[in-house]
Amino acid sequence: MSSNTPEYSRAYYQAHREKTVERVRAWRQANPEKVREAARKSVRKWRDAHPEEAAKKDAANYRRRAMDKVKRILEANFTGGGYLLTLDFTGLSFRPARSVMRSEAERMIRRLRADDRGAGEELRYIYAADLAEGPVVRLLVNEGGLDFAQGPEGALDRVARLWQVGGVHIVHADRANGWGGLLELLTPGTAAGGRSWTRSRNMREPMED
Image (cartoon, rainbow, N blue to C red; front, side, top):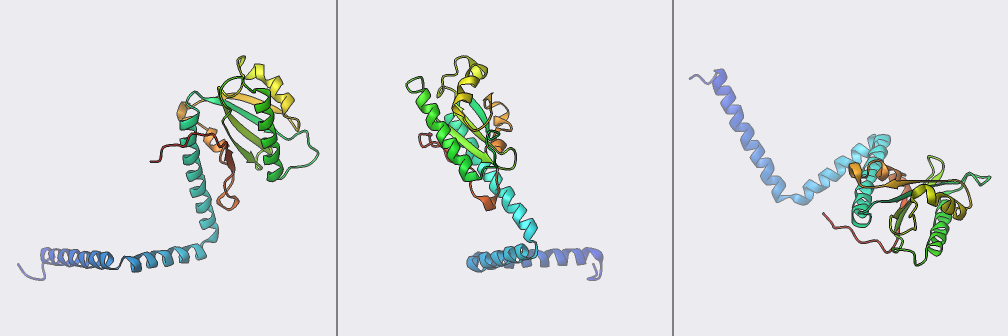
């Protein structure tokens, strides 16, 4: 077979390619720090050239990690479901800042605990202040943590009395469909805004993967 035949050329270049790949693999294994530094430089170069895309990617990654963390918390602490309280600020004459929303949410939680003292399980909760929609606070409480014997509708008047800065909406939430859209409701915000949700200290820690 002549060295100029297509079969010879394919075999030669295939062997050459395999040797090159093996040399590169060996170099990478022998120089892990140089490989990592090259990767970091490549990422920095891309981020500098595409700042808007980088910010969107950061926000998407933050949201994904936050939703995964909240899902594990819900699985560990809300096995029987819970009640989602959507608390708005329509009673105020101004648009509240996130700090005000969190302050009012903490005040509401203290009132709920005082109102239901001794009436069931210890209250566990997770809440998020959402400035983009509303603004509203979404507060998820464990099903046994509040006296909702008559269901959400029966408890609405009592909860509305405790929330003094706006309206209240209550629905039952459970793990159907992997908690459905609840994870998105409890993880608003972006990477730049930091963590947007708060949990009670008496939560059981989720199992790590």
